[in-house]
Image 1: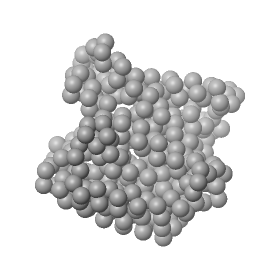
Image 2: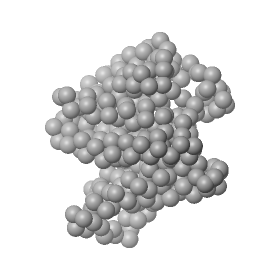
Image 3: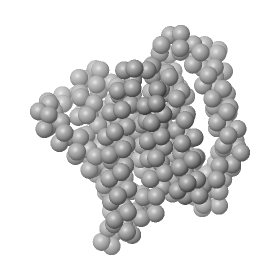
Image 4: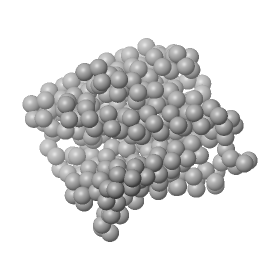
Length: 306
């Protein structure tokens, strides 16, 4: 059980370190370099293991979609929003992933939902309102659309793209027979290239958009090792011992760890609305998962895409 909490503590550290990395680098450059390096390492690992790296022609369309949504859109939107949001608020918004995965299943695959599930979803979505309504001075700089900041909406879009990306990855692995490492490796290289291209267009290269190379390199290396290597494999290992339902529910602890790390590293103070939202979301998930525990249905979580 302690490995589950270690996993989500590591996930939480990724948000905190990402916030630190943005102090020394522009967001698009950070995403591009990290994903290019991580993708190259994954493909190199696959090559050294002498595993097949052949992908059917028909599968390349989904690889490109995976690169665009799961890597490019998810990370560019998340890191742009993270410039203005606290690390724990960004992380907490990722708790939307179980709810969005259910809605995607309902809309894309016509999955039926009982009244109890709809009630759980409604309570869960309502639970995010208190924390979204409280905005910091830094967040105000991002601008607003109605009562929500553009930074909040950007992270919500990142979560939705991440969930859709996991659906694509599942289809690639199950239907097309593509190795998860291979699919992620190619998608990271392609998505990272897109992010770097955007950086060349919109960010100032003089010579590169990094203000201090050493801390930038340390943060990037940490993100690659912890998020792309350790968490990816540890999550897969734990799914063999625990249900995906339990793992998704336990993923709520990530927000708690991020609040602790954010306070220790960046001095971020959690508003009482955060705890109110956390409690309401937990109630919503508990109601929804009552039936899932009976059926053993597995859900997609985006918490390990960061």
